[in-house]
Image (cartoon, rainbow, N blue to C red; front, side, top):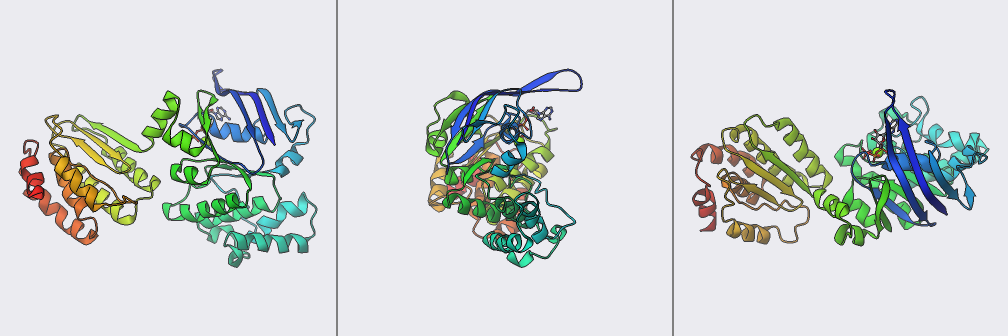
Length: 391
Ligand SMILES: Nc1ncnc2c1ncn2[C@@H]1O[C@H](COP(=O)(O)OP(=O)(O)OP(=O)(O)O)[C@@H](O)[C@H]1O
Ligand SMILES: [Mg+2]
């Protein structure tokens, strides 16, 4: 359906410098495929999507859509964009039009549908994305998730052959990510051909038939979700896949950037859909860090999807085994729970709080006391809290 051959894109900046996010992109996309495009920031994922529908004409190479080279110059771009819906991070709804008017505008203008025809279809599509009741309101009264669902309905109203999504959920409040993803999941079930640039790895894994990992200006690795996430074959893919599930901070001075860490932990919780309780446990971790860690010695914090590892103030990973076992047991199934492993004085404290995660009130209530009672600078601390936990 879409074949891309040796596609490249070079931007020239005002200072005369150039940047080439796309160097040599090659791929074939078949009807019904759901392809998630993942990769580090700045690797040209958005540029690729924009090149595919010629919003960003490529510097060289070919894009062949249904047998025709759309880069050749004669191809009518309005026709191309009718075939390809695009859904952006920022919704791009017309603010001065109602939801219904937003959806019927293009079908009436470009597909020459009658108002009646366009409205009937629009209402059906709005129903499909759960927005039929909001047909007559203006976008300003909608939440981000609702706006994005309208944007998807608007795109569907043009009967596209493929929809290009550029980070459809990254501007959304975390509570709204799910509603948009479920609409996309439903489209996937209906075999809508889609290319989705996303940082939602769990979603990418669930919904996609194929994953493109972009790096170094090319589709660096292309495979099934299982291949890419479980058995990546190339080093940069491995590094990326490992990194996305980890958050590592080295704290080696009192002047550490706690705001960055704070935001980082938050984003991490959001990205992996930690339920509120777990996020609360993280809040306590954060509070501890900021209130109490400043006087202590270098510490490495590693948050993984399922774990927390800290290297203690004396650089010794204190025996954390008993602790690990215990918490493994506690968080059986590990679904959405944070799994803490204690390796240091600080993380031993964290472990205690984590073990109370079923009762957020208790966590919140107990945290400061526990901390205050800790003898400050306790060497490795394992005799302290960890020891007690064990017994
Ligand atoms: N119009 C432009 N003019 C100049 N440089 C651009 C332009 N658009 C993108 N770039 C540059 O091209 C590179 C790739 O950008 P792109 O937005 O495609 O990356 P991305 O993979 O989508 O990143 P992210 O995950 O952050 O969205 C970046 O270095 C970006 O600054
Ligand atoms: Mg982008």
